[in-house]
Image (cartoon, rainbow, N blue to C red; front, side, top):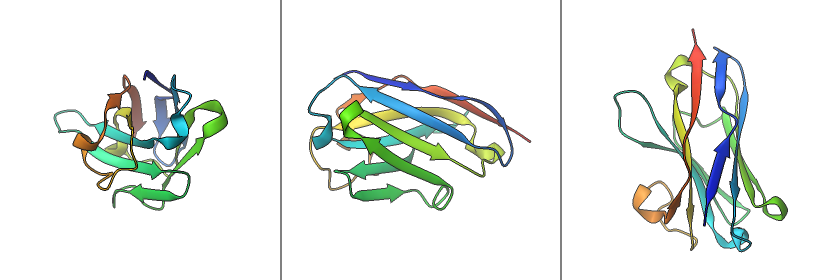
Length: 123
């Protein structure tokens, strides 16, 4: 499975961006999909995940500001980011797991990773 992330860019504090991640696999709907981010000088951290089309998970730092969604017909998962803060600046990567994961916040649950897309939030 190949994952292609896009949609990053430069935005001011309080602004919004929508990231997209397209998967090459037609069985996309059975995957757990997630977004992780890596800020400068920090380790990769969990942002959001969607298991099937109903179960969503968010980190505390983005809950209420970010929304994960998916369009199985397009094999695409989205991350709508609102009320962005400078601390949201990071490279955002999408990930896919072949099974409905029990621990969607853990990087080890995911089999496939896309390249990152850079989000920069200016103060």
